[in-house]
Amino acid sequence: MGISGGVSANSRLRAELEARGRAREVPTFVPSLALATDNAAMIAAAGLRRLHTGLVAPADLNADAALSL
Image (cartoon, rainbow, N blue to C red; front, side, top):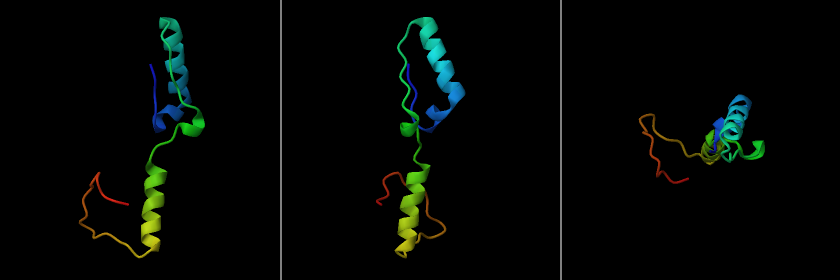
């Protein structure tokens, strides 16, 4: 069993996953807290860099997972 991403920083979730793994004798994988982050800060930093260069998007811009940075 394992968890990743921002949710893996939740101490209660981490402890519960590890306890359930031990009880079932199943290996668990939990990243260190330094690696338990989500992409929100990265996306905000990329947006701020674009703003500082004068790049702004129109108000009707829709989400696009393939949008280049």
